[in-house]
Structures are given as C-alpha cells and as structure tokens.
Image 1 (cartoon, chains in turn cyan, yellow):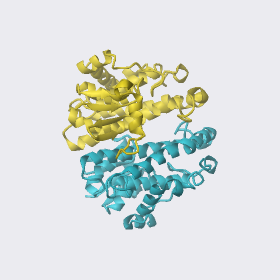
Image 2 (cartoon, rainbow over the protein chains, first blue to last red):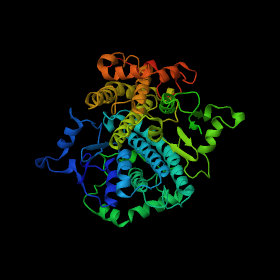
Image 3 (cartoon, rainbow over the protein chains, first blue to last red):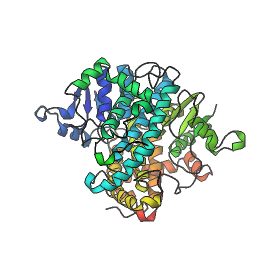
Image 4 (cartoon, one colour):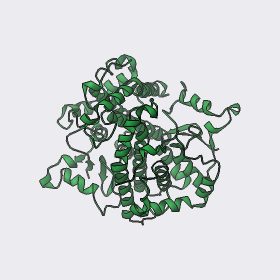
Length: 245
Length: 245
C-alpha cells in the first residue's frame, strides 16, 4: 500500500524533507493535499484528519504520514520511521540516535529560518513585523548560520567513516535533509550564502553529491518539485539579506 | 555504569525533561556540569565535549546524554533512547512513534515559550527586545497556548486506552514532559494559566497525577530540583503576562 503524505499544497515546506527521502528510494506515495477534491483528496481531506474527533492518535500539524492505520507526525519522526524501510538509516542502533539527533538540529535551524520573517507572530503579516524581521534576520546571518554550519561542517570532518556523509559511510536521510536546508538558505539569503562553498567545502560537496544522484536529479527536474516561494519557510525578501561577515 | 547527563548548571531548562524520566525510574545518573571542577566535572567538562575536535559524533548543544561511548543529543532523542531502558515507553512499535511525535510537539511549544522573551535574538538582552517580546507573548497567550493545549487535551480525550495518559495505558516520559511543560507555563504566565484547570481538566488531572507520584514528589522536594528562574526557558516577566481570552 502506498504511503500517504499529508502536507500543505503549493509549497515545499517541511514536507520537502520527507519527499526527498521517498523520492530517493522511489517509494510509492500519494500526496493527499495535492490530490483532486472530487476524488476525496485535497486540502479538505487533510483538514478532516487534523480535526478528527475520533482518530486515536491525532496529529497536531502537517506534515504527517499515514501508513495503513498508523499516523506518524513530525518531520524528524516521519524520517525516523521511514529510514529503515527506505534503506536511508544505518543498521547500527547507536548511529540511528546520532542520525536522529542531527535531524533534530536541522529541524531547529529550519524553525529559526522561518522565524527570520515571522519573529513576532505567525498570525501577523510579514509586512506588520518587517522591522523586527530585519533585526532577527541580521542576527541569523551574523550568528546562527555560522554557528550551525560550522557545526555541520565539523560533523562531516569528524565522521570516523569519512566526510562524504553526515552519519556512517552511506547515504542517509540526514544527508538529503542537509541538501534541502542548504538549498533553502541559498534561495532565501543569496548574499549571506555567497561564500558558502569556500566557507563550508565539505557541506558544499555533499550538496552537489545529493543534487546529482539520479533519483534526486529526476525529482528536482519533475513537476513534483515545486519551486521555492514566499509562502514557504525559506523566503527571499531582499531586505532581510546581507553579506556574511 | 551511570548515565552522564550534560546540561547547563543553575537552571531547569531542557535538561529537566530528561531529569524527570531518570528520577521517575530512579536511574543512576551523574550531572556533569553540576559536579566539582576539581574532580574533572563542571561546566568546563561539558564545554570540552561540545568543542571536541576528535569526538566521532559531537553534539550541537546541551542537553546531551553519554551512555558509555555513545553521545545522544537533543531532548526528544535522549528520551526516545532512554524510554525503553527506563520502562517509560510502550512496547508497541507504532505507539513509540506516537510518543515521539507528541514529545516533538511539546518541544515545539517549549521553543515558542522561550521565544516569548527572546523573539529577536538570543544574543540580545531581554531588555533590548522588551517591546517585541510583549507582542510575541501576547500572541502566544491568545493563540498558541490555546491551540497547543486544546490539542493535548484532545489527545487525552481520544486516547483509546483512556484519558489518564497521553500514549497507551501506562505512564510514559511524554506524561512527565507534559507535567514539566504545564509547570513552566504556570510559573511564567500565572494570569494566562489561571483558568487552566477548568479549561483543560484532563491535562490538569495528569499534572496532579505526575506531581504526586512517589519518585517525582521526592525529586521535587529534593535540592536536585532547582527552582524556576529567569535564566531559564520559562521566565516570569509580569509585563509579558495577561489573562487568557
């Protein structure tokens, strides 16, 4: 049976981290909210699950995955669930916790990237928090991007199994998520990430390696890959971007 | 061998979610950063691990757990690792993903609670972002506390195994973490949480049930439990509090 992926239509968002794993493994999956309403799919089908008063384990927010009767919510949790099934997690149990820890650190940075354009409240328009956004984005570029990226570069450098992968000696979903994180940062902050390749050479190599994997390259060229846009986590607002120090 | 817990000394913070699980299970653990420097412990021992250039899998930030050679970072990941060992996670594999999903949703709310007093940048003083903090805290009280808490109340109500526990029919670390989340919110926002017991009766009952468990009660009365304070995630700044709508 196909996996059912539930995520907002029209943007990459957090759903994209799950899509990249499913696409790399060429897994059979259905995008519920992108399906036609007259076939019982679409956003209303997703909202029905979110608002269900009978579901034994209701999710809080998209993305969530349905595998048979089981609903698995939260991006990192979905990837932890899918990892062994898709061959994208090491067999070693200890390394699985290393992978999950890295994925949660990526998730933390994703939240911070979102908050650069919505520091005061998700319920307010960007235009109504633009000045606060400038302060937060400036701090993100000056302090947070370097702190996170130096760390991830160091994880590659110190990986005892080589600097090609963040965990172990083979591709995991953490590598795929790192590609997506870097891709989003490059889109949102082209000035701040301009020297990225020289600042973080191992991460840059990983980014290229993921992008050119046959299944990922085919996905990125397909219409299943939506373009980055300003409904997403990673938004390109030129007034929030600046060169890194 | 004792578990080694690494977290900042002087505050409950994210380390507290791990402590509650260890204390409930009466597990043998050492607080590295709270130990004496002249015995090789203390904050500098923690910083040495964080800054290590040879550690195979360096953590990004506290809290992290060391179990033998394995370093497990990220609060929810530590709890997922400890859960089966401490008897605080269901045996059913599907329910483990349900538990982890709930724990990550708790973690999201913890981050939002932190950002009420630091919406612009962690690197700036609270005093330098007080006006922005008022806007963010007001939105947190009006929109985010109700959204999260109604959801968690609904999780209890819809749990097919009864409304005593968030997952399954026995205590898990998710219940312990929910106690800590509510306790932190009550400390930080006494006005906003004043009607909590009538608004969220099942969560209030869970809070009481956890607090009066013998091992938890003994821990809370011990000097191992630090008081809430304004170095922590949950800070009581009266100017950020107001009655809920």
